[in-house]
Length: 357
Image (cartoon, rainbow, N blue to C red; front, side, top):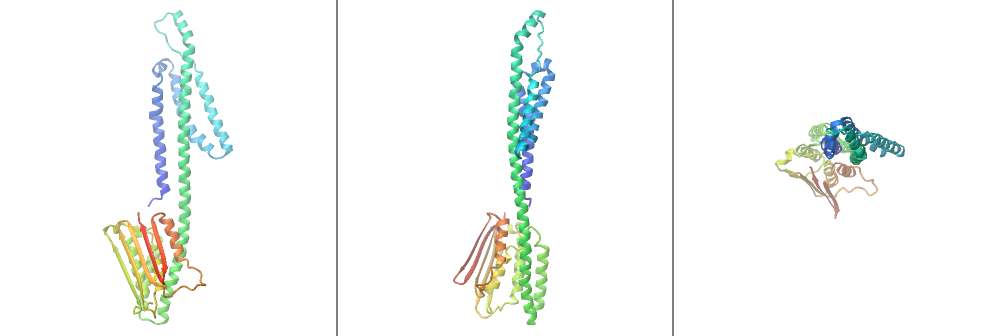
């Protein structure tokens, strides 16, 4: 799955390109059409071309240079203001252009008279038009530049958070794997010491679990069916150390047809199953362990229940399994999971509802 910040980066890039095209193809030509460009082009084509090229230059200069500089620090803010004042000065120079209008069909004296009487009006008209288009261009480019910089900062923050979460998840995975290996090897070691006939079967099951852990656990996601099969194999391995006459394990997995397409972070559920088997199994007390895994559309529900027949000593420090699992859920499924853990009257329950999409 593509990270959110990459999607934001792509969408922001297309948005900025779209705004640039809108200004260059629609807004600026529309402003030019409001002016008597046809009359100006007749004998002042140099002025019109210069004005259009300059307005394009002002737009990209302010958007790409001035605004990003202004948002850095005071030193760069002064440079940005200097650049803006420089564009205003060049615009003033352009307004000093002396417009020339032909007066065909008039006698020389009449032409001179018309030029003298209309000179002030002509100067004011093209100067006002130039300053108006310049100010519109500056305001539009500043607005677009601020929006682009804001989007860049948001994207950069998302990228930073993504890298931070990625590093944290790598740490939690590194902690989970040894934790899982220690508990499983402890079970296998017990079978070897007692020379149990189940040792060979347990060894083969252990190999399958190790294979899954090193081929799937490093991936971002696995299919629901793969994770459910891994849980089943883990339960079968743990049964080798459990007195099934005293401890009864009920494991069920049900899913609809859509579960084939659903994926989940690997080994994110195993901690809850591991704790249920670790603290709910007894060789001298009757106990039941219920583990239920259901998938309906894009919602996964995990429920475990066990009697706490092997309570953790009060002076023993809390383990890292549940804590790490909670942190992984918060990082991978923020706002998409609901975890309820209860320990009432010696009955420990876990109810996890997880949105997979």
